[in-house]
Amino acid sequence: MENILQVRNLHTYFYLENSVVKAVEGVSFDLGKGEVLGLVGESGCGKSVTAYSLIKLIDKPGRIKKGEVIFKGKDLLKINEKFLPKIRGKDISIIFQEPHAALSPVYTVGYQIEETIRAHNRNMGGKQLKEKVLELLVKVEIKDPYAKIKSYPHNLSGGEAQRVMIAQSLSCQPQIVIADEPTTALDVTIQAKVIGLFKKLKEEENFSLIFITHDLALCAQLADRIAVMYAGQIVEIASLDKIIKEPLHPYTKALFLSLPKKGKEKTKLQAIKGDVPEADKKPKGCFFYPRCNLGKNSCRENRPELKEIEPGHWVRCLVCGIEGRR
Image 1 (cartoon, one colour):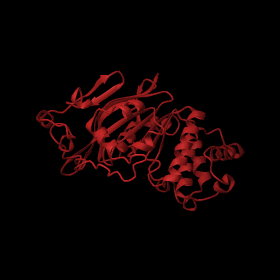
Image 2 (spheres, helix red, strand yellow; image 1 turned 30 degrees about the vertical axis):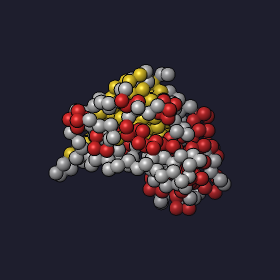
Image 3 (spheres, helix red, strand yellow; image 1 turned 120 degrees about the horizontal axis):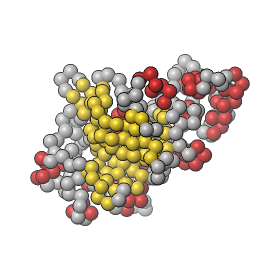
Image 4 (cartoon, helix red, strand yellow; image 1 turned 45 degrees about the vertical axis):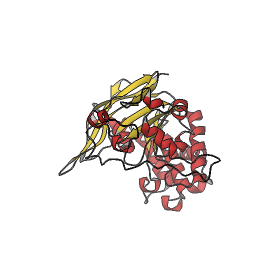
């Protein structure tokens, strides 16, 4: 598969008055053309900061300290700032976590989608522009799209607002869509409909998708590959089949053990002991060591690198060889 995006050794820090918060530390991954990459992990693992770093949406006191984000042969972290607005929305679009917060409350749904299109296609206007907006709302299966064009975000349900955000993100036919926790505020029924919508749109538009979520089971319904994040690092990345059938990293295994088992309603869920370390107070060695059942003394002192255990299966662990498979 040909890669459309290559991320190498990405570091994003937040410089506070008395500390440095290392939110993302050494994240590397590839995204193939037409691929769905799931980015999963507990809250606070750096998933969203990674996503915003890809298109330099990091505000002060945050700073992308180093790394590369290669798109169309160019490093997005090094190109002139004035060219980034031409890439955001058109080539790479993002769907934010809270649609009602991301949409302006003072403009209609139709106007906000129109503005996104105008930003990258100034030749389109009038009747053609309104027809394009209507076409997008129909595509994302909004009920009564004619009425919704004139609606304000507060008139929409959570599911409708999310569909509007999806329509807006696809309005300029991007090559990459980043969906940041797009189902967090939705009930399970609406979640299922949104996942189904993503599947349909993916087939129709053939964009590459980075799907960010804390819900591993939800991600498994959509992703081709899964990257598991912990404390600002990717600790495991492999095909969906490999991650499900043969997870290697202790954190990935723990995530699966914490999921409800189908047909075993009375089975007690296994919580992961402890908490994700604070971003400015991470352990010296392996970040997962304080919560790990396989950890050794070497894990306390030495920080593991992301290594390819077998073709296409990368793991950041000192004991994930023979012992990690037990």
